[in-house]
Length: 312
Ligand code: AMP
Ligand code: MN
Ligand code: MN
Ligand code: MN
Image (cartoon, rainbow, N blue to C red):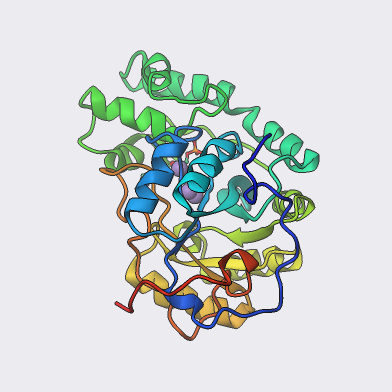
């Protein structure tokens, strides 16, 4: 893959230089494009982030790095710092969890092959999802969902959700998930994703840093969640999302405490998918609390940036 100068070099180890005020840089380390289940092209996501005042951003499409070259090129044109990223789907304790990889080398063979394996089952799963929905009286969902897919390798529940809204089965995608696409509902198909240790291993092999995505979303009790975070850290994970578009304000506080307790650096990311669907727009999240260690505090790419955002 050809990335423009300065954007695609294999990320070296972070320096020991700590940014004087990393908390007030507008950093957004989680979002999606049409290469997975977002609705904007990679270059449009970058333009929107730039318009919103984002200073450094990572595109983190699900199980796919195919949008990074386009996004990096656009970021290079706009003078926005681009961090190559990915969000890996993992099965852990019979639930799906997500691990974000940041500052990855998208050409790394271990990572590329690992992600190809994870994407592999999506097609057959989508056919089964459509069968389930047909039994619930919703015909043609596979073909309908495909019309929303930007990358044929990456058909996801979000594409089905958009189709079901289109045909008036529900009023918004959130409702579609609740009624049709979560465990126990007609369009839900259990699926075996990557193992936690291998997902972290691929990210580390690609020179990246592994971050536990939106921990508040997982339906585990405290003990299970504790075991997950512990295993993640032992596998080589370094960060945890605290200020996330998939979290409530109470979750920011709760997982801020987990970040401190586990010694995992805190991340900030909108999890932006679409202007109408997403709770937070790119870069429009609260700052990380000053009591937390921002994941990016010692990244050399950000060393010379001036703070641009204020505390809420
Ligand atoms: P998949 O990878 O096909 O299982 O789809 C997962 C994606 O569905 C997530 O990345 C979210 O974008 C979306 N999603 C999951 N749960 C919900 C929900 N309750 N409401 C809206 N979107 C959701
Ligand atoms: Mn998604
Ligand atoms: Mn996710
Ligand atoms: Mn995401």
